[in-house]
Length: 108
Image (cartoon, rainbow, N blue to C red; front, top):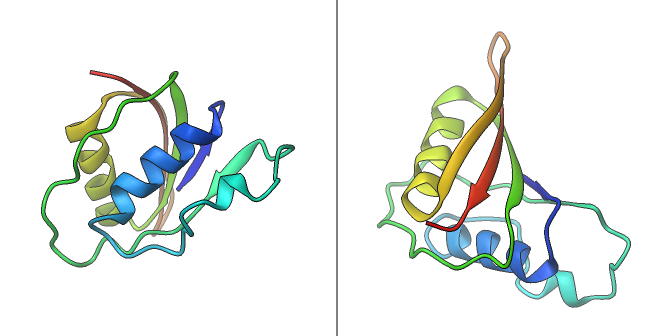
């Protein structure tokens, strides 16, 4: 998953919300390590386990999100985001074994 066009606090909020219920390689507080020139934040989530719903969080502004991976995992992550935010699907690219989806996340 990639996030862009957002403030550091929104990166922490979105990745932290999903990471609370799905294993991830995201380190909480990574945005506060002096990476001010970063435009895109990336992490991976293991969408295989069944988990309780993620708790919604407030965003300071709209966030651009890109999901990429196996179609089932991408759709599952998209559903998790849909439970927490108003999600607009902006682009979908389907490959042989992979799906790429660009989204815009907004507060409900």
